[in-house]
Length: 312
Image (cartoon, rainbow, N blue to C red; front, side, top):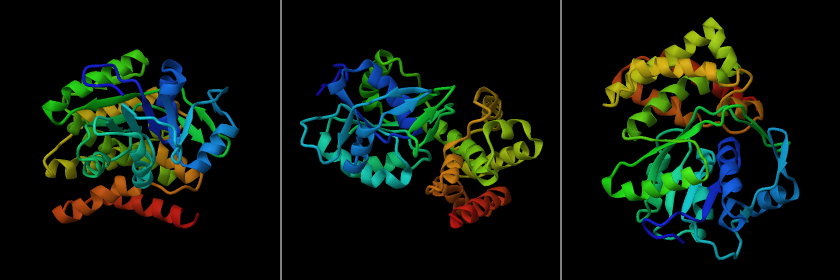
């Protein structure tokens, strides 16, 4: 277990889906096998050990730590990369493998996971984080991951006393060649990513579209832009305006992603898994009603996705 200003050694990733695998792969390539693992429930641990996961066509066997393990392991860093609806379970799985010095980061979509981590573990340092610009596709049935753009983690602190912890995270990411941006405006960046997700995640999920479809189809692209604008107007009314310039930046980034890939919510719809609708329209639409701001596009996307989920 590292102390302040010493290099972080032991790392756990909770969640072995698209984001967890894409970033965990780099930890596994760099850190000694006894210093890194994917943390999961015992049933998943047995399944993961019995069959390697295929990453861009190459079979890989990653270290796995079952939540009921008696192995004496204390994490310096835990990255939560699970679905939002699994965070409560993941936090309890992680509890035996941490102490008050363990740094917690969340790559979960939305703007609520850090608050939940801080409430559950009030003595632990929580570094606000965003996973972005990745086009990873994970097939849980066949345990295959495909990506052309690994993306990055954007992280930053909301309290000056956490800067030294962020320095340790930056050193670890540099050592593991993990792509990142260290942000000085992380809360604004999170609102900006929420605005983007209200567009791209929901349009792709509602219309079963790919990044390429939204980038090139005029109707889908218009809906994508309208959804972002509605989310931006609500966030601005709440006091944090991501700005139209960031909308243009997100729209431009679509062309850098695999045109055949799709965001996480669309993948969830494809595989008939629960969706994280509460993180996007489920967050913005209620606020819009309180503020009397019309958001017809977000309401329509929400209804379309709910109809799909109801048919599973």
